[in-house]
Length: 104
Ligand code: HEC
Image (cartoon, rainbow, N blue to C red; front, side, top):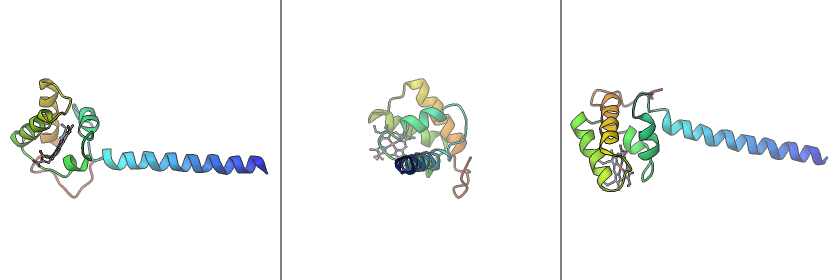
């Protein structure tokens, strides 16, 4: 009887762990692999959701401006990292990127 109870409890725990990691994927799967990706998914979610980034489309100039703005208000990126991030975003979230398609 007791062991059944523990089995049930552990199943619930596993289920909630799985749903948390599924949510994590939901946010990060729009960011394709590439240099700068890890910086984006860690640094750029500290103040707002990643959707603020993944739903935007900008040229390299535009991203440089935004990333510099973010650094000015507190994003933890040095000059080199900010440049890497801007390049990554311009490559993957440029004006020609398809908004409707979820990138893997
Ligand atoms: C220190 C907190 C903070 C961090 C870290 C941060 N942001 Fe922001 N972000 C903000 C705030 C506050 C706003 C809204 C005010 C504004 O537009 O300046 C914003 C707005 C934005 C916008 C919409 C603004 C526009 O002009 O379209 C984008 C896009 C964005 N952030 C991208 C990023 C990216 C990319 C990163 C990582 C390099 C990042 N943010 C990291 C605080 C932050």
